[in-house]
Structures are given as C-alpha cells and as structure tokens.
Image (cartoon, rainbow, N blue to C red; front, side):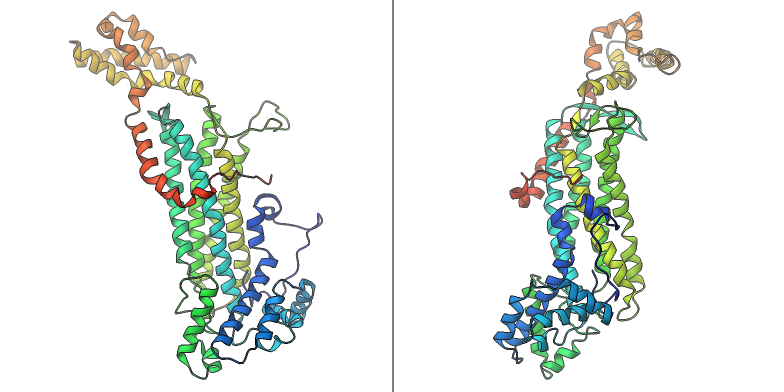
Length: 490
C-alpha cells in the first residue's frame, strides 16, 4: 500500500501457476478485495493529484481549466503495463505513475504532483482506504450482532448447564450465554467506529512535514498554504488533518487500526471456540449444508468447519498487530522506508481477514441449531447435585435438622457419583432420595425443587434488559443494511 517505497514492485500473476493470497482468491468479499486492489489505489492517487491541482488553481496558481479537465478525463485511463515498465526503470512507484498519468495528460503534465512528495498520494490514499474499509466492516459486524441478538431473544428462557473451567457449574440460559458473545462484539463495534471516526488526513505537508515546498509555491503566503491543506482534506471527505507530521502520518495510527481489528479477532475466536465446544457436546451446531461432507474417511462426521475457519483466521488477525507496533517503533526521525513493504502486507491482510471472519460468522449466526433435548439430558445429569442445597433448605422448613440432612445428602451424593464415574451409569441421586424414608416430608416437592428454570436466576431478565438498553440503540444507525444475507466465497 505505501507509496514512494518498494521500487521493484511486480504485477502478480493471476493464473494457477503462481501463488495468490487465499484471502483474496478464496475468502474475502469482492468489495473488500477491490478496496485494496491496484486499480483502486492508483485511481485514488490520480484523484488526489486532481484535488491538489484544483485547490492550487483556486488559490491562484497558474493552472488552467483545460489542464484540470484533462486530468478529470483520465482518472480511470491507467496503463498498468506502462507504469510497470516505468517503475522497472525508475525504481520508484510514485514517479512511475506520475509519468504514466502525464503520458495521457500531456497538457497537465507539468503541474501533476506540483509541490507534493510521494507520501502525499501514498499516505493519503492509505487513509482513504482504511476509512472506506472500516465502512465495509461496520455494517457487517452490526449484522452479526443483530443475528445473535435474535437468537438470544428467542432462547432467553432456555436453561442450559453453565461451565467454568469447562467443568459443570450453575445453570444459565442459552440466550444469556449468547449475550456474552454479543457484549464483546458490541465493544468491538464501538471501537471500530471510534477509530474510523478519529482517522485524520495526512493532507498537504511536503517532504518532512513542514510544508516548505507549498510555502515557496505561494510565495510565503502562510494563509494560502493552510487553505490548501484544508481544501484537499475536505475534498477527500475528512473532517480533520494532522497538524504535525514527518514525511508520513504517524505510524501509531496503524497500531490503533490493527489493534481494534485484533481485538475483534479475539472476540470471534472466543465465540467460535464456544460453538465448537458445544458442537462436541451436541448441544449446538453451526449450519451444515445438505451436500456438505464432514470427513473424507468418516461419512457420519459433522465438523464445525466454519467456526474452525474463523478461529484459524482470527489467530492470523490477532498476530498482525505486531507488525505496526514494530514499524512505529523503528521509524527514525522524520521517516525511514522500512515501513513500506511491511505495510503493503499487514494493512491489507488485516482488513481482508476481518472481512472474512465477519462474513463467515454472520453465516454461522444465521443458521445456528440448538438441541434442547440434549441440553435437558445434560441438565438432568448434573442438576441433582446442584439442587442439594435447596433440598436441605426444604427439609429444614419441614422440621428436619440441617446437619442430619446434610450428612444424609453427602452419603447419597457420593453413592450416586460412584455410579456415574465408576459404572458409567446415570445420576440416580434423586431416585435414592425418593427411596429414603427420611426425605418423605419433601418427596412431593422434588419436581418443583428440580425445575431447571428455578436455577437460572435473573438470566432471562438480563437478556431482555441488555438487548433493549444496550444492543438496540447501538444497532439503530445500521437498520437499513440488516436484511443483507451473508455470502461465503468457499
């Protein structure tokens, strides 16, 4: 992505005899791939040169309407072959494209890139692409949250066994567990929106950020240089530009951008890991197509391959943040060029990866399958142990001694546990309690004491309040895009 940088760029072959990134060829959406394409990048370079010329003309530099019109007419007329040949000779990507643009704009050739440095087109284009890439991700993330919110609302009251340390714990509900996922994604949505809205344009700054070349062009008129910077910034659709830059915008921006994407990756990895664990328990499954094959050797298998894909790519997304951290730390003084090659890879890959995991997670969330009977059976296996405190309290209310009851329950519980662990049988604690005359005062209450819904606390009310107070307001700006279905490349 970075301009004025790698001097030996080659046009990648697109056939089957050359490597292509799976992110572009297999996973990411066409619209995200287009944002990071050469066509979009170099077309934006030309647009930036046009905006600069228009602003310079408006502020009094001798640039004609004919030159401006010639540039406008050739924004899309890019001879990529000529540009590649120019770069091969010049070892400079920006000057290669200056020459290529000038070739089809002979009248404007003398004013293209006037007063600018390579980072005028390179860095500003990167910032435009980053902003537009966020604009693609935000509605996708909002749709995932919306789909999961529908799922949580529908299953807000469905009791399920909770797990801590992946060991049986107190009950929760399927909807409440889903809200754990939603809450993380809501935080990601807010973070992505914040970083997107806080992006500032590099603007018109010159070689070391001092604007010296533009001050010379305008014969020392400081006000006109400031106006030029403001005009180009507004043309690019940004509200603010950096006041202070070196040759580049600070690479701390790239850290901010990839940090929120890495955080999104962590959320997706946790969600999809949970789904994979629940699939193993046969309580929940991701969508499984009619003709889908789970294993080439084991025809009965229904592997959670979409969730596995999300986890795999989320790891890559989380790892990418190390690149801008190290790049920012080694930018010497006003700038060094060892940022360029790295940024070409990590910025594009981060957004293509985030795009892929969101497309896939939306597909998963639109087709999640729950198996209530399996969940109910697992609850029956564990609930008797959890209900022992309630049983003791009921016996005390019926006139029993708390300590005597505790000892009786302890002995029966260990006997039931031995059946489960040593014999592989079902938990028969309740049957043992029913068979013991000591507990006869509460035998008629056992069904009520073992009602799973009485063990889920305020889970259902929490789901309702969370969706109404936090999720719905957050999704309101994205209402118009909620009906779009997820499309998977593969």
